[in-house]
Amino acid sequence: MVKNEGKFFTIFSYIFCTILVVLCLFPLVWMAVSAFKLDREVWAYPIRFFPRQWITKNFVTLFTNKSLSYGLAVRNTLIVCIAHTIGSLILETAAAYAYARLDFPLKKLFWRVTLFTMFIPNIAILLTSFVVVRKLGMLDTLWVLFIPSLAGAYAIFFYRQFFLNIPMSMEEAALVDGASRFKIYYSVFLPNAKAPMVLLGTGCFIGCWNSFVWPSLTIQSTTRYQVMQVIRSFRNQYTEAYGVVMAASAIAAIPPLIVFMIFQRDIVKGMLISGIK
Amino acid sequence: MLRQTAGSTKRAKRVRRPTAKMDYITAYCMIIPPLIVLGIFVFWPLYESLSKSLTDWNFYNTTFVGLKNYQVALRNPIFRRSFGNIVKYVLISLPIGIILPFLFAHCVRHMRGLYADMSKTALYIPSIISGVIASVIFLFIFDFQGGLLNNAIRTLGGTKYNFMAHGTSALLCIIFTSFWSGFGHSTLYMLAGLNNIPDTYYEAAALDGCGGFRRMIYITIPCMRNIFLLSLVNGIRGTLMMMELPLLMTNGGPNNATITPVLYIYKMFSDSAVSMGYVLACSVMMMVFSVAFTAVSFFLIKPDKSME
Image (cartoon, rainbow over all chains, first blue to last red; front, side):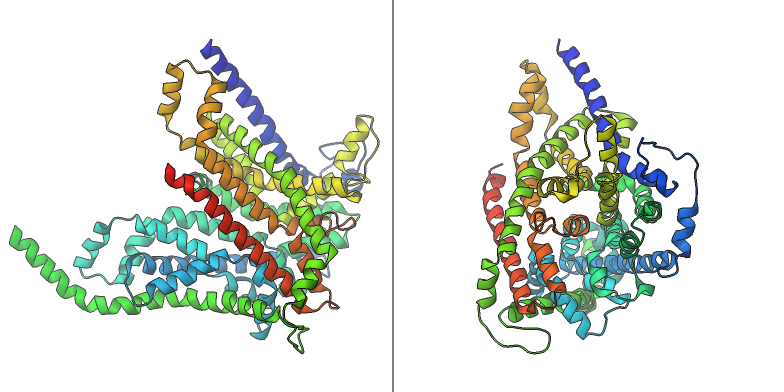
C-alpha cells in the first residue's frame, strides 16, 4: 500500500516537474523562434509556433541599424562585465582574507563599517550616486558602470565566512617555509576558494550584463550604450517590427546562458549549500 | 623529536617576526581599496541623501527647510498609493511564490538521476534572464492586438482582453513575470532547506506507519519553518524595493495602479519640476522602512533559530 502510494507520488512528481519546466522555458523558446519570423507572422492570428520560412533579416537589421549599433553595445557591455567581475573578485577576496586571517589596528571598526553598507538599500543612494559620479566627472564613461560596485559588502562577508573555515594548518606550513602573507593569500587561499568565487563571479557577470537602471541613468551617448539599453530603445523604435526586438533579446540572452552552462554544476551546488546560511 | 619541533617553532618565530610587522602593511593594502570604493560610492551618496533631503535643493541653490519634505511626501497621494500597491503585490505574489516552489522542490527531491539535475538547471535559467528581456517577452505575450495570450483566448472562443489597460490585470501580469524570473531561485532555496532535514526523521515516521501526507504535515513543514519565514521576509523586502519590471512593463500605469515607491522616486527624479530635496526625502524614508523591517524581522526570527 505504502509502496503504491510512493510510486503514485513519483509519477505525479515527474508529470508536475515536466509541466513546470515546459512553462518556464516556453517564453524563451518562443522568443528564439520569433527572432526568425517575418513581422506579420509574429502577430499571426491562428497561432503558428514555427515560422513558415526561417529568415535572418531581423539579425541583419539589428547589426546594420544606423542610429544604434548592436555590435558596439555588445562589445561595450562585455568589456564592462569582464572588468567588473575580475576587479571585484580581486578586491573582495583580498579584503576578505585580511578580515579573516590578519590582525591589524582598527580591524573591528573597519569590519563594522563594511558590514554596515550591507543594510543600506540601493534606492537610498542611487540618485545621489548619480550626483557624486557627476561631480567626479565619470558620467557617460564606461568606468562609471563598474567602479561604484567593485566592493560588495555581502561578497566580502561571504568570502570571509568561507576563509574562516579553511584550517589554520594549511597556512602554518607555508608560514614556516617563510612565505609572505600575500603569497599565502595568493597560493593557498585563492585556489581553495574556487567554489564561492565561481558562484559570486558568475553572479557578478550576469548581473552586470543584465543591468538596466544604472546604465540608463549614467550613459547618454549611444556609442557607449549597454545591451539592455539598446534593446529598450529598439523596442521604442520598432514598435511594429517585433522580430528585430526578439532577435536582439535572443542574442542578449546568450552570454549569461553560456556562463551559466559552463559553471552550471558549481552554481546549483553552491546555491544549495549557501542557501541554508 | 621534541628539540626538533622546538627548533622549528623558533625558526618560525624568527621568520615570522618581520612578517608580523609586514602584516599591517599587507592588511591595509588589502582592505583600503574596498574601503575607498565604499567611502566614495556608498557613504558620500548616503551623506548627500541625508543632508540634502532636509533642504529645498534643485542642483543649484539650497535652502534649509527642515522636515518639510518628509511631511509633503507623507501627504502625497501617489506616494501613499504606491504603498497600497506594495501591499497588493505582497498579498498576491508571496503565497504563490512560496507554496509553488516548495511543492516543486518537494517533487524534485523525490526524483533521481539526470532528469532531476536537468529540471533543476532548466528551472534556474529564467533567473539569469534580464528584466528587460523578460518584460519584452511578456509584454508580447500579454499584448492586446496580436499577443499570444489573446490569440489563445480567441482560439478558444473568448473575446480579447486588454491586460495592460486595467489596473488589476496589469498588476497580475507584472506579478506573473516577476514570479517567472524568481521561481528557479526560490526552488533551489527550498530544496536546500529540504535537503537539510535529516533522513532519520522520515525513517522513524515510516516505521511508525506515517503516510506521505502526514509526514509532510508533521515533519517537513515544521522543519521548514525558518526557511518559510526567511523567504517571506526576503520576499517582502524585495517587493518593497521592486522597480524594474513595473518601470519596463507599465511605467506605473494605468492611472498609477502598478506604481511602487521606488518607481515613484525614480519618476520624480526625472521630473525636473520637482525639488531634488523632496525626492531624496522619499528615498531616505524608503531606507528607514527597509532597515526597520529588517530589524523587526531579525528580531522575530532569531529567537526560534537559537532554540534549535
